[in-house]
Image 1 (cartoon, rainbow, N blue to C red):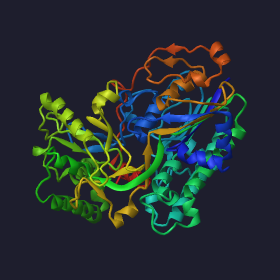
Image 2 (cartoon, rainbow, N blue to C red):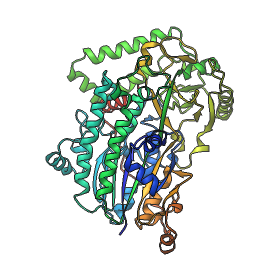
Image 3 (cartoon, one colour):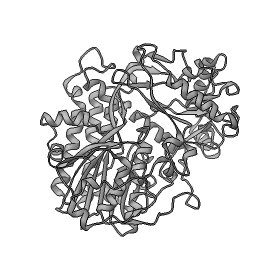
Image 4 (spheres, one colour):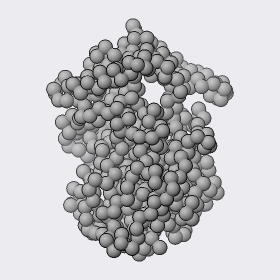
Length: 561
């Protein structure tokens, strides 16, 4: 009976792996590259972890599963809130397999909190609140799994807070320690029983790319003038070597009927030192207006926020968190208080990566001014202006493609997507940094100043992740082309002999299977399982205290400011 082990390496890229394999540094990945199936894996647009991981585990596009970012917008509001797996509106791979009696183990996959009641076990990913960065009972299924792991191998960490360290060497040490601790638990659980599907994700390949790219890329525009010490200069290699060791463990332990699949949700590359201030650009186009003295407004809100957090007694803060939505209101004011909504037709949420573009639509936004009949006209005008945008420093085009949301996504939840999605051109091979427009007035594209250069991410996401596989049912060696992240769920279901639900967007990657296997195992399509939409359990919102924990973790990983 076919089995599969899936090793997810968040943000892993062949741009790093291939040179190291050629240098003899990653022997187990080299084995899969040379004797198995290998190729790039197309991520979602944009290549962000929330939509990508959810598209992986559902086999559907974000218009069906409904996850576009780490946050979701509150209805008729400019406020957002952190979201989790309970917001997902499509069944997962684990649900399909569990319903067919397959035993599954799911460890550290992002957007698996709260954990599902699967036929097996689950440890949630970094979206679990946890305690001091460690998994707690709420993040494991069954809950008793938490006690078992602690008694057998010790605590299970979620993700190191890399941006909390000032010494890069300490960051690397924390990363390696996290990988080792999680791997010890994963290997213990893998050997506990013969799983049909075992998946383990290491997010450290992504977090360290955000933090260490400047040290490892001698051409990085964000590289310090002084060469980094040797262990920091090789930090990314050290992390990939640790993940290669993990792969080696599973290759050694796997039975003869097991397929090994290594994948990533997106790739990674270096960041430019040119920052983009999107709402400043919208201001220049006459589509957004800031209030007079907007810098003072923003500073006053930020000061009030900091003083409130510092001065209010803990009991009062807990009461406010429990009885009001004050934290979300304050966060919204801190982000948008400087915008004059009565004179703004379009705006950006200005997240640190892949920021969204929204029309200030009357009836949807609380202070919207664009009439519904004007929506398409305003959107078309904005698309035309974006297509003409040139970097004032280099003269290069800024934007590769602008997409209406309905051009990218299909399904009942397309209306939750931003009105426009942008694919950005690279800035001389490096991606732009996106910064908030409030604060000191800057041009829409400006070089980072000295202090900020040291704080920002030096690496960021790219469109193409990795796909490596080896197993008795597969043909090899071969290079796979045009594989998409949404194709993995139907491919895994087919490998394990489970009918493919007819409403998936992904397709079985038939080119990776041996002809004899395809001839004797025709693809079967089953009924479309119901979505987790109307009539499903309500979304499980984070408490204010949990939101603070999630925010701190995402800041530590470089995802948010």
